[in-house]
Length: 397
Picture 1 (cartoon, rainbow, N blue to C red):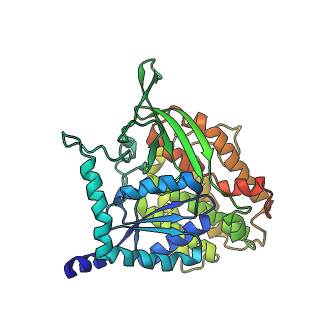
Picture 2: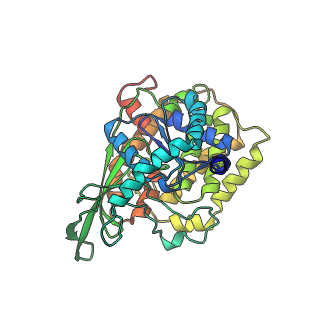
Picture 3: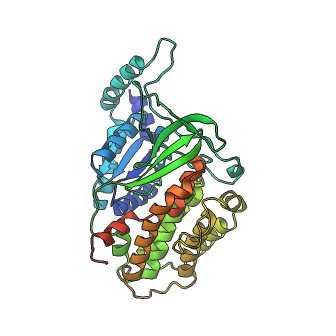
């Protein structure tokens, strides 16, 4: 028993972090604390020890969280964080929970029983629902990325199921006129590096999206984190928001080391203008992302949006990433606060970006592979907090 306890204590936890609507401040606090402790972030529930739920998103979100919890192997811990200042204490409690042998046995017993009941006479286990999507576009291989699970799907819900969780397919004609199975798949609302409060319902044949329909869920506040974060320095907080969007995109693309650096630089920007000590690391990170030939080659031409869209959405996935890079670069090269509020025109732009992005998703995602759809959504990264803050007439309107 002492050996088991000691081995558990030596294990470095990995957390799978999901955010409910309006939970940006809490999510950033969780990511910052995980980095401070040296704990890793998992891209799928199966690779995690701790499920960290930021905020509360209502019954539908809670149901998805329950399914995610079932996918996390023991020893495990569930952390529900409502406020940023509670993150450190609750992560401490989660580690203690994972060390407890009595709790480990109590958690494992019903799962073992359920696994036995879920086996059919041939030994096939149908007790789980849907596994992560591991197929990736061959163009994305060969990069110097730490994690090649490009656009890992995490939790995907089938809207039509038979007993035991086996997905039941419809029938429909594909783009070549062949009548093939159609699956109804929901991306979100609890995915790693996914816009909080967003569900995208897909009709899929094979791994090709035939139709897509976005839906916004959850309870929303009258303000946006990014509006409140930089009340006295709009330029710096805009760069921090761009760094957050870019690091989430890089995480979806499977480049975890670059995503980790992006999170650190985002937090530096939120604290203060970048000083001489961190400036070289900023520059190296931006140069590394900008000069990535494989990333550029993989994303060029993907998710093309025409000139009738807002400027922040135009072009392909790579063009949208390039705008985030330029936003960050402008602050690094000229780290002077401009004294403007982060609301006003920028708030209008972020809300319009989110509104237009939601309306364009159906047409842009149709005909794409499912993994590509994840990358396109990540390149849009709609700020639904900003959209709701303005529609509700928040203080930054």
